[in-house]
Length: 312
Image (cartoon, rainbow, N blue to C red; front, side, top):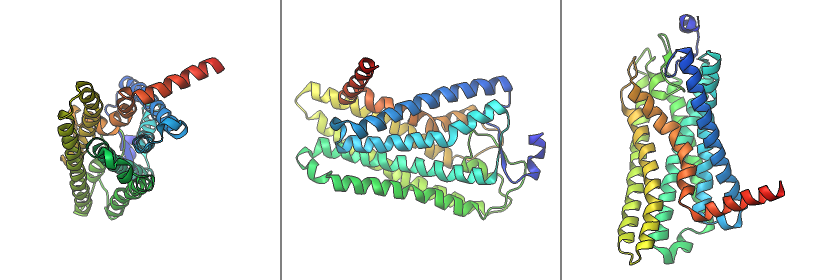
């Protein structure tokens, strides 16, 4: 009934990956488990980097804000899709869709910005250790984080401003688990959508520039590490940096691909997989990647678990 009446409504219909009820229940469980794990991991990172005196360096300060962005990004898309799967009511109003676009693109952009800052922080720590405290002083770190959060407002504002001028028509069925900009643009009745495409192209170009900056930082880091006489030091840096670089590559490459790749009326399994790779997977993996190889974080978590065990 909702599918039949969607053309008379102003909103959209989120169809997700399948309209089969059994598959929707399975999707809801998988997304819910992923959301809970990702949220728990990010909340732990936020808590310990805020409260523990050992974790007050710039690296952990940036990591805390990455976790805030990850938690926010997950919360914008996943809970609503879980509710849609369980209730089988995929309708989302125009206002809800625009809000989701605003916040999701903002948090995603904030993540690109903070990952760029974090890569520069690691570059200074490894390649310019004698100047680290001067370059990455407390005030400069605060300014960097402020710039990250302020810049995160820009993508959502540009997208919403350009989409407001678009008149939609057709069935308005979104074959995605959230209001994705490329999917929404399919329903434009005129060429007004080209303004939004221009916004996407511009932001993708800037994201690609950030990607080049991140890769450049890691190239300098790896070239410096290879000159280290100690094999143990080389192994430690590589084991820490390579997982970070993998997550960055996964997030940026799939995100840019999704926004520049033409959408179709019959999305493929690859397109659904790509959307998960840049929306759900990085925020869930980041707490694991950034803490698994970090002995300081692991020791703080162990201390926290032991203290709670004995006090309980």
